[in-house]
Image (cartoon, rainbow, N blue to C red; front, side, top):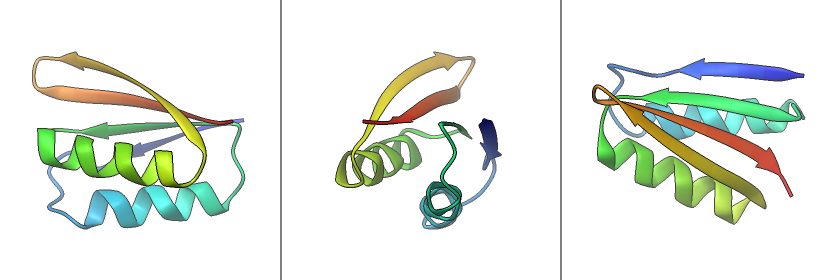
Length: 70
């Protein structure tokens, strides 16, 4: 099951907090939408720390990160 976490417009640490909450729910795939590079890097670090692979696509200032459990 895939869940989308839309945290565009949210300041750090909110994107990390909400992504971490989604990780605890054991989804097979988590799509995280952020609108700044700092949030993108912070979520990527969280994912790596929690054994998730990350792919990132950027379109018009919106970063779409797809996290999958390794």
